[in-house]
Image (tube, rainbow, N blue to C red; front, side):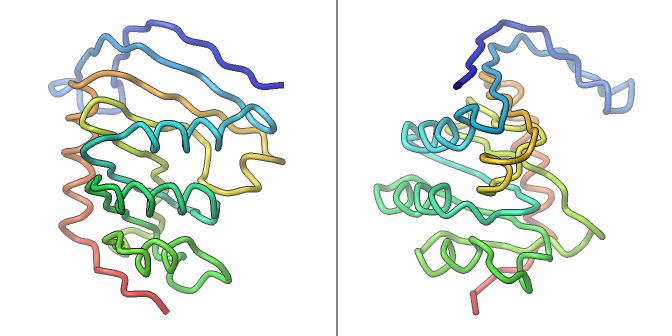
Length: 174
C-alpha cells in the first residue's frame, strides 16, 4: 500500500543554536516504507528536476535512484553527489555508477560517519528522513521520507551541503 500524505507545517529547526534558529513555512509530503512508494517518489522528484540536484547520502546502493540521477545529468540537470567514506570500499555503491555516468561524486571523509540522507532539488525542494537510498530501505526497513517544499529551507540545506563539499574529495571510481 502506498501511503502519501500532504500537509502544511511550520518547521522549526531546533537543532541549530538558538541565535540561529529559523522558522520556515513548508508544504510537506510524507512517505513510509516498506512498500510505501518511497524510492518511486524519490525517482519521480528527480525526474521532475530542471536545474540542480544536490545529494548527500550515507548508504547509497539503490540502482534505480542512481540511474535517475545519471539520466537527470544527461538531460542537462546539474547533479552533484556527496557520500560517506564507506562508499569507497563497500561491496556495491552507487558512487561507481554515478561517477562513471558523468555525475560529479565526492566522498566526505572529514567525519567518522557522514550520515546525511538528503536531496536538494532546484533550490526549492528538500528530500530527507531516515530513508537511506537503498533497496533494503525501500522494500524491507521501517523508514520515513519527507519531501519539503520551501525555497528558504532548501537554501539552508544547500549552504550546509556546500560546506560539506568544501572538505570532500572527488571520487573517480574503481
